[in-house]
Length: 414
Image (cartoon, rainbow, N blue to C red):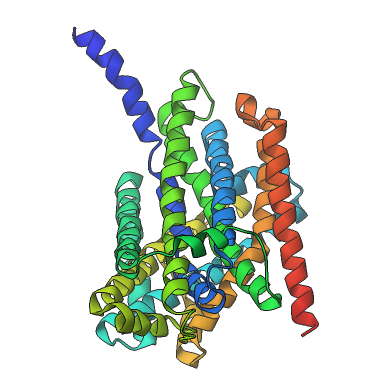
């Protein structure tokens, strides 16, 4: 009887080990940059760009599954595999752009945390930025005691964000006909394209692709070393559930942000060009409870995403260059540009929106290597992409690249 119990419990334990990495990656999809772009989209264009959030979330599901599958099949992360299989010049170029993406990521996260602290406690933005950096560093300290504690902490903060916006949505109500209209793909001028590009940059986060493969690879190594062995299907199913649940929750949060803004602010033309304006607008329209829920969600986002961004920065440097920096130094390097923005007096919400546009430019440089590697049987073994998967992922990379080139042309032409 004892032996039979052991046989039953072992596969459950193996599957359970695969849960968690996607929740850490998903926090990148609800970072403060998402707050800025989603509320800007809803307040300016109503439900027009809801389809962009839906499309971005579906793209994210596929991309994160590929990233997780890469880690499961190889026990390594995407930057490491790029270093092993690509020419040195290509690897250096990928590393440089990935570091720029990491800086843009940290800008959004630290500025967002600082704004939340100002809204909640009246703390000046530069001091709030420092506090956000310190808290993020403390969250990263959990990882040194085992990745499970870090993943549970991040998953808890993700649930705080989702709960905050579900509460505000319940207060605001929903317009089903408006939501249905927002699912039809269309634009209205270059400004809507700019916001749409920011939404994609905030959804298909390049650093989430790098980090997810690293976390899943670490989980896989605890199970069976660097080679795929028996029991592949239960692990794959657990990995897919991890991605669907976590990315689905993040997508729900993003959609509710736009829906709230479209319902409350777009009809009245109320200015929500800043996150402080969103906070005040929610308070005026729905009461102090709604404003408090927004600020707490923003604070949870800033703290969690800042720690995740720093973690991803370590993966980027270690993978591409086979070198690493002390965590405190790494935190300081990525934090510095954010503090410069806060001390200089640049509008923080505008900085958040433009940081997401910068992130969208980095997406192809993460997607293309991901597709090239995951389609290779020599690297992936039996988990190599099917032809259809490779085609869909390639189409996503091309669409995002074309949208970015169009946006650059619109900006240059004024």
